[in-house]
Image 1 (spheres, rainbow, N blue to C red):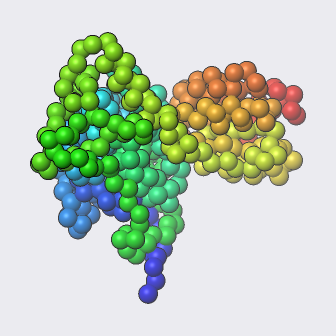
Image 2: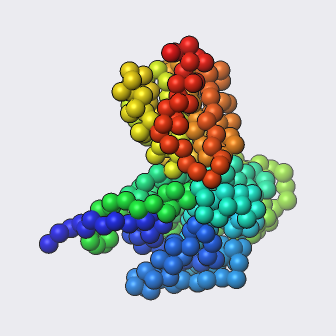
Amino acid sequence: MAKTKVMLMQGNTAVVEGAIAAGVKFYGGYPITPSTEIAEGMAKRLPMVGGKFMQTEDEIAGLGTVIGASLGGLKAMTATSGPGFSLKQEMIGLACNAEVPCVIVDVQRVGPSTGQPTSPSQGDVMQTKWGTHGDHWVIVVSPSSVPECFTLTQRAVALAEKYRVPVIMLMDEIVGHMRERIELPVSYDDIPKVERKRPTCPPEEFLAYAADESKVPAMADFGSGYRWHVSGLVHDETGFPKGAGSATRESQDRLRGKIMAHRDDIIQVERYKLDDAEFAIIAFGGAARTAYDAIDMARARGLRVGMMRPITIWPFARHEVSDLAKSVKGILVHELNCGQYVISVKAAVEGRCPVHLYAKYDNESATPEDMLAEIERAMKEDGLL
């Protein structure tokens, strides 16, 4: 019997299948364009695998139910778009501080406010990192194809469980709504699944936030006999609030440290035709799809152009971008906004080479011809043409 099946599938639907394959058993959320197909798909698929779907009264409650389900021991996720993602920020802060694993899919659309619900944008890049108040640490990943929606959703769930952190799947309308060929396993039973660290001590010895050298505490399910306190306040390893300045420093150091100490496991980038490149594009998500064709067109004209595609958006791939700047003579950042990711790119490049921005924010994605023209313009400015 065949072990795989070939399908024509939408990006949002591939997210649903990736979540099911990863072992997600709870979805709570509120429908919003252009992510609604994820809610619809999860409502259909979860009962088939013994999971639960809950449509809530608003986006805040949606993430609240996800946090509760995760505390109860389930792999849990939600999905939204820009306006709903804005509403979720308070709950994201709680999940960060209480270290509750969960996945939040943000299928971006034009903003601000209601904006253009059915048009592509990448305007939520900075909101994913800085949307909620205070210093907080999340992981953000961004797929650029339908097959990657399937695999990267699994990875998002795995990272959330492994590091006890909210993981944001930053998509855009292009990736969410396009349809591509995808090859899926007939059965998901053999797909490896990452589980959160569980306590090994007796319940009476359990400290909810005591961590070993990994900096990630073991997590007990509510109702399992291990009692612990969940709070958005700064707390010590017991989970109860502690007002001392040293507690705040220790908490922040560990929350940041558990991400940065494992950056090599968390950060992923794709390198496309960079071996001999003298000029590089940095693009992600739907914007990167245009770059592949534009690079091939540039190569046909004898221009040595390549691309670095961040798959992990945050934490930022600073070392990788810094190394790229040492090997090329110019960089073009392409994003579907007025210029957000380029800020971090310039900081990492530190003047080693010129950094150009191709910002597109007119409700449409760029064409390969558009991008080729921008490449040639930038290369002329840098004296490479």
